[in-house]
Image 1 (cartoon, rainbow, N blue to C red):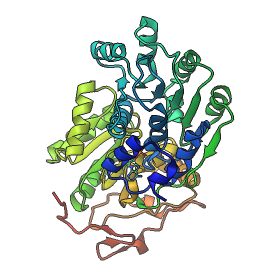
Image 2 (tube, helix red, strand yellow):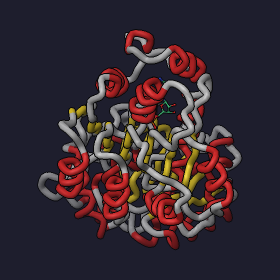
Image 3 (cartoon, rainbow, N blue to C red):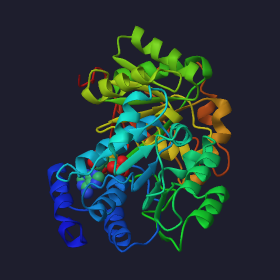
Image 4 (tube, protein in one colour):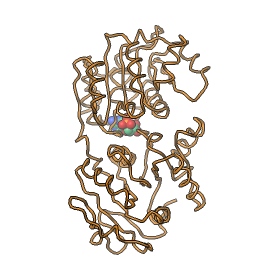
Amino acid sequence: MSFSALGLSDKILEGVKAMGYSEPTPIQLRAIPLVLSGKDVIGSAQTGTGKTAAFALPILSKLGVHNPVGPRVLILEPTRELAAQVETAIRDYARFTNLKVTVVFGGVGYGKQNDELKAGADIVVATPGRLLDHLEQGTLRLDKVEFLVLDEADRMLDMGFLPDVRRLVEKCPRKRHSALFSATVPPAIETLIQWAMHEPETIEIGARRTPAESVKHVIYPVSDSQKTDLLLELLNRVNYDSVIVFCRTKHGADRVATTLKRANHAVAVLHSNRTQREREQALQGFRDGKFEVLVATDIAARGLDIADVSHVVNYDVPQHPEDYIHRIGRTGRAAATGDAFTIMVAEDAPHVFSIERFISQKIPRVKLENFEYRYTALFEESKPGAAAGGFPGKVRGGRVHGGYSFSPGGRRR
Ligand code: AMP
């Protein structure tokens, strides 16, 4: 099935072609016709499935040409980085139209945003807080909105944005089309759906709880005191092109980044205590290959489209099982294969069990060959229903089943 059979406008098809997309992804196949037919849509696809184009292409097609009345499309995103990323994608898709898109988020001055809003944007991509500021200051109205997109709704909930989102939705006309994307649908999102959407159709791509099949993942049990040593050793041995290392806290991320820098890794850090400029530089540098390791917290890295991540390392086990899926979703995107490593200390065991329950999969425990473990108790531990104890048969001659290559000195660049 090609894009041209889906009913998109010629200008948007040109944009898709220029992006080099040859065929629609499963969510695009399902969502594009629905949005074009005027249906409200709930999408529960994972990140990396092409969901931005799934809603953007049909909406842009329906908008047609620029109209200075005020924004006709409002897209809400939980973080600045996501907002910026979605705006860039939309600019690309709409490059053969005269539609105007602008992005609105906090942490930067108001000047440019005021100018762009005044000039008349057809599409506004925004984080909730700053958008409310603009509404209060009268620099923006939402009374011409025809399409509302609530992206990463579960993360908006986690970040406490739902009250802001409700206030914003109330400012939009009742007669509109809505789309909502969420990896999970907890009760609060269900309520939002009931309240904000009109007879929505749900599209679920793949089982909601299944990590991308192209990602191979393993757990490295280790004692707390050797976590950092193990991380350094892993980075030294693994053939990586680009790695994201996830940490639980901003402080922890800074500490890990400092250690890695000392070990001569080219490292960037991404967390919400950094200024907008620092965050942009970190992301850009990582995308350009200037930094080969990005150390990040969950919130900062949520949903970011960072291409070609060869490995994800969970320096800390995620506290919420959904975050495991989101984290490892950074690798194996667009069907490229990727590896995800989770470093686990004794007290992480309950979190690991709940991740395994959540994804209905056992994650193999692996021991790093020739690493001087001070304690090995974790390897022997074998709770009923857990995947512990599986490592010895998995390691053979420096190679672990599933293709993890640990031949020393193997960094590609
Ligand atoms: P998303 O899930 O929207 O963050 O998209 C993930 C990545 O897939 C982005 O780099 C998109 O540019 C890319 N992408 C989206 N749709 C397609 C497609 N139909 N063919 C190839 N790549 C795509």
